[in-house]
Image (cartoon, rainbow, N blue to C red; front, side, top):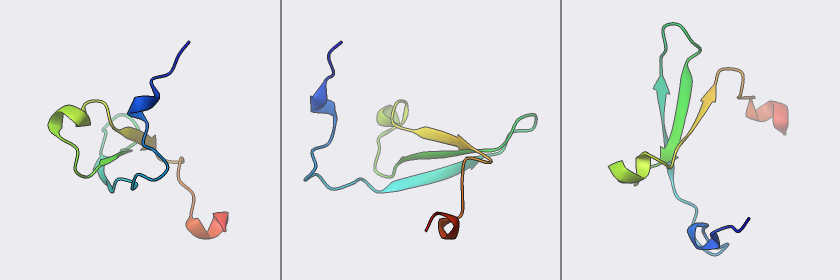
Length: 63
């Protein structure tokens, strides 16, 4: 298996700013979608991640 490393940012590349949206589901846990702030509609189809309730911890707990 080979990986296309051209699609990964280089260490010197700036980290993209992220945005989020809360998706409220009636019959399932709510979700938080996280995606690049400046993404085009086409990029948003593949450049996102979701997290469910319980996947987050407080910052103070982890310090």
